[in-house]
Length: 56
Image 1: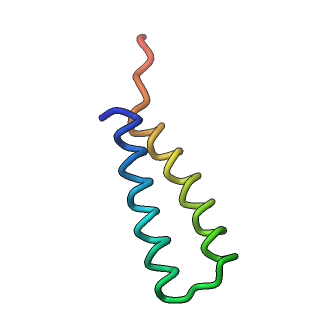
Image 2 (image 1 turned 90 degrees about the horizontal axis):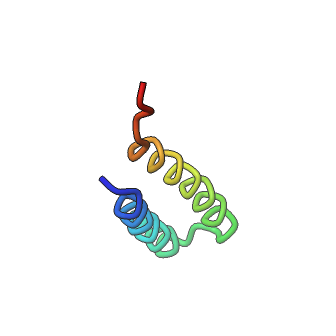
C-alpha cells in the first residue's frame, strides 16, 4: 500500500470524525486538539505501514 493512499484514507476518516464532533457540539478547542493528535498518529502509522525494508 502506498503512503499517499494510506494518508488519504486517514484524512477521510479524520474529516468524518471532525464532522461528527461538530454535529454533537464538541467545543472547537477539543476538535483541534483531537485533530492534531490524530494527524500525528496517522503520519506515524502510514510511515510504519509503508516503510521499506533495509537490504541486509
